[in-house]
Length: 233
Ligand SMILES: *Cc1c(COP(=O)(O)O)cnc(C)c1O
View 1 (cartoon, rainbow, N blue to C red):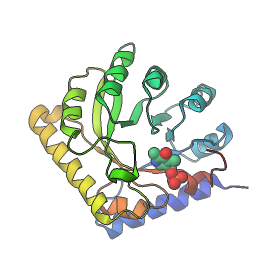
View 2: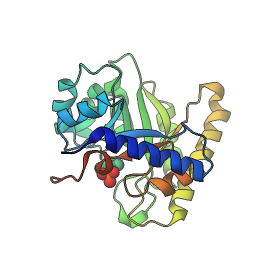
View 3: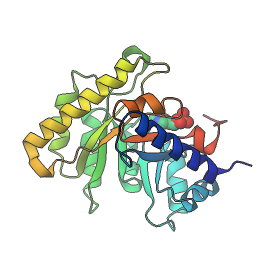
């Protein structure tokens, strides 16, 4: 049987180890447990071991699991999959974060649907850092216009950037993300002062946790190393 608690402990240790090795302050990297395709009992085991942030990629699956786990107080749901326009309403209803916003049209719809709720939706903009290898994510050239648009959205709170570097991506891809993130922090700070809240670089998965942390990731999205291999999807 899979030992979720033990897997979480091992990952937490790897995160601390990478932080130490790359001179990152302890506690600077949040673990997002990616529970897509995994049943609610495993999610509950992770929660009981102290895990509060969970990531899902498939909206149809998520809208069944999230209400079934509504008794777990303090749990936070992050949408990390590709976002289609017809799914934006469900995302705003069930999630407190969306990491994969990569088009103005999607930001606009998320903003409209979120207006019915008290709190803004936390948003990361997904950057296509590996070019041809990935279809998702906005190009670096188009990023500033998307930032400007999201800044105008009252029901979206811009928190940072997200990337999925291709397998065996060069370290330069991670470095570019770190530069983009830092420059976003600076420009938002200049514009909004203390109100700017750019604190999230969502980067790193089970297989590239270390280079991601080396290059400034503040949130790693880990599925397989916590919940085991996914057999479906
Ligand atoms: C599935 C997924 C992950 C987790 O990947 P693992 O290799 O299982 O750790 C992270 N980020 C995104 C966007 C995903 O879709």
